[in-house]
Image 1: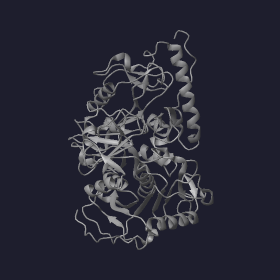
Image 2: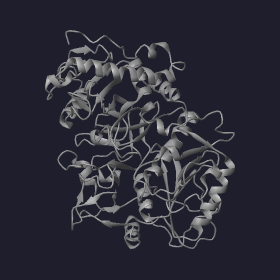
Image 3: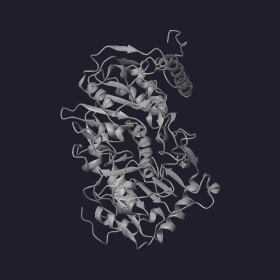
Image 4: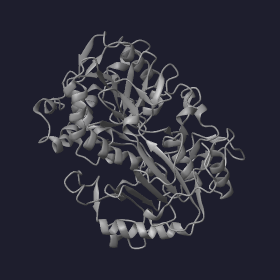
Length: 538
């Protein structure tokens, strides 16, 4: 994409005026060169740029805000997820950030989100660093042509060097913050160099605009398909396996994290992938490993001593090491980012209690229940303050990014599941034979085998057993999987301890779902787990 070297977009609407140091729509090589020259990062042995994001190596959900005004006051699901801030506070901070950027080199990139041509949303990303702009180049969809004179639908300002001197004056908690203004269509990200804030802020925007205004189900999920159009979705929080399980050399990758589902099909929101790379192994995840080459961005990864070889097993800086790369680095990706409606949906949960079956087939109402529950174990390092896996419930497997009430998305899911040809599975990618610290994590090869059996229809043909506590129907056999793995009860050496642990988790499900009890139908409420007396014969 050729751009005039003198092309500079008008940034006055962002309070950035007369800045002569604007680098607009730079090529990947130029951004890499700039990042190295400014000592933001260095090249790895494969040519990827490795950068450190500074103090913040994960998102800080407590510092995310939405401007409360006439457009959002009645529509947004206000609370700990969506904290309000005044329009006056936003305007004051926008002016300060504009003045801050006016005297600095800045990088400006125009792209869009939403691969479906009917649902494109243009986005301009203004960054203080070159590596952040490389991230935007990789994660947002790259247009064939741009016009710097056209104001985009949305703008994101990412300024890790700007800190709010008196946060309490603006209703903030800390010097760093993320603020979304749905009326002005501007996002402010300040005081943090973690690039995940850029993509997740725009995901939050899409989670408001597309369902609320266009009745499109927005999803925190990966998606792949095959040459026959057998599409699969993989829901789950960070670390549960969305990227790993969707990057299958025998299938076509649509996207690894964010999608929309219309009546006609599924489309990717992004132009790239943002994969966790802790423990990245070329034998287990060859597609992702090979994608980390020139043009890719590694974040907070250590090197082996005196080399440029990344040590993917090291968590010295964070467990949340990341690789951001364009979809074209995955040779089996779908070029246009679109696929037919799904035939199989997988809810991924890393069960830290070790009691959930490795795979279960869900009814529509069970799918609603587990979609709203969004149970998993939050993986260490993904968010500041989480140092070990912790059992959490995240509505719709992405509560932190939902501006609307979770039941709004759940009802859209119910509408889509009216198709009798869709199968929904709950997959435990976490622990078996005991809880975290006692049991073991289920082998990736077994999970892959269960996914394959589900996709081919072989698993559905097996005999199923209903779990006495969770009411989940799980198979007794699966090709390439030891049968004893499939029954979570028999993997424990102490059955009494198993049922006690299962009841403990069941109670957490019940307690969590109380917040939705008045907003969902009775048939969904009936899918809650059942606390049972521990069988004496156990």
